[in-house]
Structures are given as C-alpha cells and as structure tokens.
Image 1 (cartoon, rainbow, N blue to C red):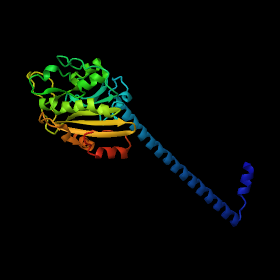
Image 2: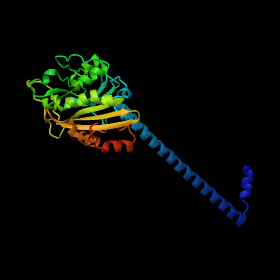
Image 3: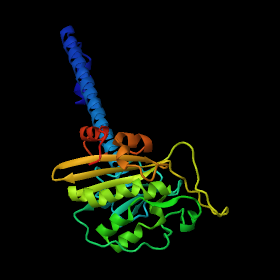
Length: 314
C-alpha cells in the first residue's frame, strides 16, 4: 500500500476531482464541528440538570438535618413534627430541639429561654392532674442550666410554655413533671400568667378539645430590639435570662378534613382581667414579630391563605 500511495502521488489529479475532494473535506469538517457542538450542548444540559438536582437534594438534606437538631440528639424529627401542624417552625439556627412527652421545646441558649414550644392534644383526657412540685427543675440538657432560684425575687412568674395542666391530663404524670423543667419556662408578668394567659390555656384544654379531633399549639415569647435581663438577687450568677415583651400562641383545630387557625399575641404588661379574645392576630403578624416561618410544609397557596387571615376565637 505504501508503494502504491507513493506511485499515485506522482500523478496529477483533475481539477474536478480536487474540487470534489475539497467539498467532501469541508462537509466532513462541518459534520464534525456540528456534532461536537451538539455534544457540548448536551453535556452542558446534563451538567445543568445535575446541578439543579444537586441543589434540590442539598436543600432537602439541609432541611432534614436542621429538623433533626444537633447531631448528639437521638430523637426522630418526624416524631416531633407530628406535634406541629404544617411542620416545625423555621429557621432553627442556634436552637436546640428538646423532645419531651407530648411536647417539644426549641431552646434558645443565648436568651436562656425556650424560643417556641409545640404540643398536641388529641381525643379526650385520660389522666388526673397531679400535684405541682415545690420547685422547678434545672434541665441538664441545656448549656444555660437555668435554676429555680434565678427567678426568685425578680418580680416575674415562672411561666409555662407547654402548660402543666393540659400536658398532665393528656400525657400523664411523667409528662407533667417535664413541664416543670426550666427549659420550658419564660419570665411572665404575674397578671398575664395568672390571668388571660391561663384562661387561654384552659380554653384550649377544656373547650377546643371538645370541638376538634386534634388541637395543635405553638407557643413562645416575642422580643423587641431592647434587651432586658431578668433581675437576679445574686450578682455573681452567670445566667442572663432575657425578659420577653410579648407572647404568642398559634392554635390549629382539625376535624375530619376541616381545619381552623387562630393566633393570639398578648403583651407582657396586661390587666389580669383582660380578655384574651381581644388579642387575636394573623399568623403572618406572628411571623413578622418572631422571624419564624410557620406551617411551611403546607402547599404555598394554602399556607398563604391560612396565614393572611386574622383568625377569631373559635
């Protein structure tokens, strides 16, 4: 073959043959160019789809990781999510999720208070409410380790977020004891705690549970820009418990395929005889005041409609 090629190179080709060869070469080059371009576009498309899939998967994993709380916690986030209608509030950066019997606490170590607490009441009460302990208990699962005596002489009540009575009659004595952990407690003015706040808790536990198959509650403090620290009779105490300016409750009642939503925001300073029904707000307003996103697992159109409405007392 090599010899034949050498021999043929010595002959002159016709101009027509040269032109045909040139055209064929140009067509071949164009084919290769277009094919390579097609491959490049295809590769970019695949990489783009991969990138989008990666971002979506990463977002899902981040969400699952946040829902699970710190790596050292052993509970399942899905189990805690069952206590909250529409999913756990978001974001949870800097908060520690503490699983309890019948409720979950999202604890804020900076403010040394629960950021929010969620609980669910379903069916009818099955237990009697036990006696209150003489002292509240330090929670050794928090870094703050707030103590009973940190509140003594401050002028503020040790205000339950997950209510003692409701948790006691629905979940039993062990669960009731957990409501007296200091991780469930926030400074509350006595007039608020012993007046309209208590009345709202009792209405949820005694009345709303009769009207609905299940009642979901998220409750927590609200702060303004000025940080006020709980007075402490012991100057050497390391704890710096922040005093909230207001409190919220978001209540969801479900029956069959129906749901109703009500939100209440009560200020720290309020008359003991105030009617909590005068303090209803929209969920959107609670989100604005707290910075949390509630019911984020609902379809967007449902979430928007539910949160915009200013729910009245049921």
